[in-house]
Length: 508
Image 1: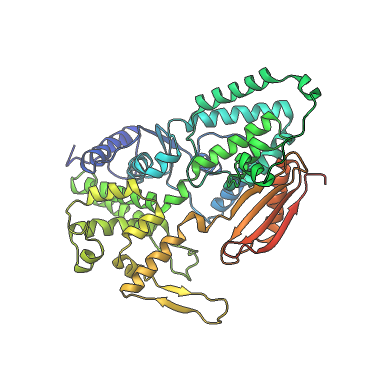
Image 2: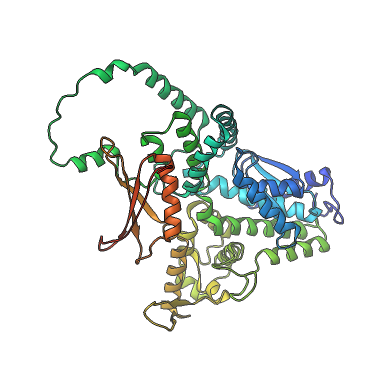
């Protein structure tokens, strides 16, 4: 079909989408060597796109008031012209689902297919972070199970009781993930089988006569607190997991709701860790694919100008004083710049590139190099490995030393060799999830005594939690735990206690 236009003008129909998809697939898979899940393309209205936003891009989920609130926020902002809708939403599932908005032009539909159905899809399927933490073939079935189960809880135990558990679990969802391995990807059949076997075992071994058996005196332990913590597997960073498994007051259905929330949170955990890479990969892929369609005469100049205009808008990096600016870099801008720079280093390296990247400079294999990077890194390690002085100059990067004891700011890393390396280390560190999430762990609880849950927040450089946030969070923990919760903020280096917070169960 080379040298024959896929479409003309802005209008499209489903035959146009099919022709565009097939042409894009040939370039993405045959020329770029992308490996993707089977694709499912769905065209939706702007109202449906807003609805997808509220559920974090998932096609189905359980009911909760927070989704309605998020829908109204997005709708109000969109109707008033403060924000625009995304051209697409893509789901990390197998098959990979890409939503196209019906108001897109024919060119934008083709661009979105290249961006989402092949760029994001390849990244989801091949990146080690997603392979380690997610099972793309299981998420849709699990979401259906979650919606059905929580709906049945609302019918059986009441909307208020169900919502109370959901509210607390949602508030703690960022502390309901395993950050350092050990998480098992979603598998609905195995999870249901394990839950059924667990309940059958509990029913089988239950005998009310056991409560009448006298308890003998246990031999004194040399370190009862240490032994207690060892048996409970403390310290434990996954608060929702510990509460689900250990809380003395939770009913079985409440434990299952907590489990649902934390497993879904675990599923989404990799996405913010690879935002720069994921968007950079998808943008680079769509730009390469659309360029090839233009080079082979399958789209005309007008369509290609629309592609260039759209891509330029996406990869625009606002200045620090721009109204659209914010903290950090635009992930599309930084990601696309780094992908393009890797291609340049592989094909047309400078002496500086050969010094900084001796393993890839001039290797004449940009596609293989990019596919390797997409598969084996997350944002932090990718930036630390591949951010070049050329990109740092392009983005005018420098580093400030903000010493609270000094009224002046000091620029302590500039555009020299040492400065480049310092800037790269600092920028990579800013993408480390450990720098954003508070290190809060369960450190002790006496289940045979007062059942008070003891937490510890290990601070960084004296950064304490905001008192109102800490109080609200502890109330949610106490709601699920059922007894008093106490948290100490401890200096990570000196072990000194810097602050203390506590909350009692609801009604106390």
